[in-house]
Amino acid sequence: MSSIHDVGWERWAYQLDDSTIPKPFSMGQWAQVGGIVMLQPEVGESRENFFFAGIDNVRFRKPVVADDTLVMRMTPVKLQKRFGIAKMEGKSHVGGEVVCQGDVLMAMGS
Image (cartoon, rainbow, N blue to C red; front, side):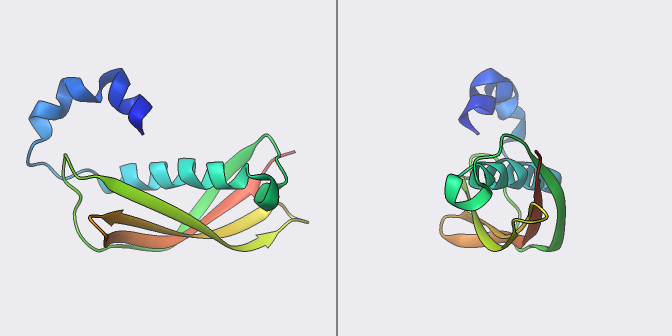
């Protein structure tokens, strides 16, 4: 997310010192990381398009505040190449502690 930081996040950072980061932001970031995983040849066969198809079983364990370093990991669990659907397990960590986890569905386009 460094490109977002470079574009304009810094202008507003001073207002978010003790604020929590809205939970939907994490889901949008998961979609981006999941898309990067889908574009890997060994996972999604290098198709050019992918779509965030849904989330399930998401648990927010701890709030994320400004200045936390959020590390996201998307692990492919099941891939149905015939239908172009992938299920992934997503986890977000702050300082080695899981702050959010759940399942993500990604769909590949043609």
